[in-house]
Amino acid sequence: IPIYIGFLDYSNKNKLGLSALGLRYNDINVKNENNSIINNMNSNSPFQYKEKVFAAYLNHSFDVSKSKSIAFGIRSESTSINYNFENSLTNQAYSNKNNYTNLLYNVSYNWQTKKEWDYSLSFRKQIQRPNYSSLNPFKSISNDVIYFSGESQIAPAKLYSFNFETTKNEWSFYMQTGLIKNFISTFTKVENNTITETYRNFKNLYFSGFGLEYNKELFNKKWITKISIDVIYYKQNDNDYTFDKSIPSTNFITINSIDLGKKYKLNINYTLNNPYKDGLIKHYQKQSLDLAVSKKINTNFSMLLSANDIFKTSYTWEDTTIPNYFYGSKYYNDICSVALTLKWNITGKSYKGRELEKPEGDPIERL
Image 1 (cartoon, rainbow, N blue to C red):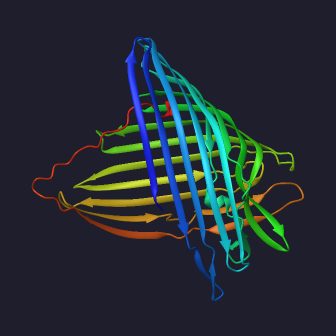
Image 2 (tube, rainbow, N blue to C red):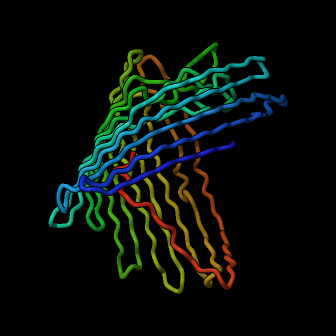
Image 3 (tube, helix red, strand yellow):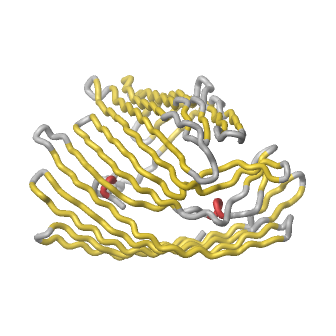
């Protein structure tokens, strides 16, 4: 998979603020013979997927006052896709080209109060492109009773979102609402008495959500904890289907690192996803508890004993909720895995550890 990436950036700080402009070029060429053996038969479904993306952008930010700033950006993005899929079992081939251009943008307003709360309001438009897996129209066996097939006519989805975010010390809170036009989702249909899972564009997906995150170092940094809660509501709209009433999704995650002394550390991670309906599918409850104990023997040698999903509660269970249309699936991933990891670092006398430079700027400001 050869990948070529080129870019040109220029920035200038002036009386009006900080201006930045540039060009981006991405080129990817995926070739795959796609061999598989099914029922002692060799299936050959080669494909070639070429994608080129050229973008030009302009960003500008300026300070309204010492504690307030405004930033905006505009980006023109042109995509050219050329692909060819073949299927040896049916002796068929399919080729097509997709060319489209989109104008993306981003606007944000940031300010800080006297109590050192940081706030940010932003509005942006983004694009979500289908990949070669989504576009391959030929069927393949997914499991014992289901086929999988892409959809060559899938259109890119466009995301419009409005975001609010505030942070102070260990607290962070966000709210988001938006719309996805031509929302891309998997969809199960029946053709010639066979069940086929494929992709489909839905007209609109509306979403709203909020989240709270808490990070704290306790007991003189002996216990570091991170707790986050997200609540998200989805509502789908399409001309061909009537959707069921949606139920919000609630996700709870807690990550804890506890210093046990004598270079021992205990990590406890817990995840809980409650049942919810997104209009198309009902998702059942999912939870997982992971434990890990690590021991640092010396500067170069350490060991880690971990156990994932110790209560065997991690599984995926879904049912469709469209009236007069039903399909359900349940995948048991509830396998408790235990692992022992030994890590040894070898360094020369002249080696000096360095911290990598981190990118600056709030992610909410990026296109």
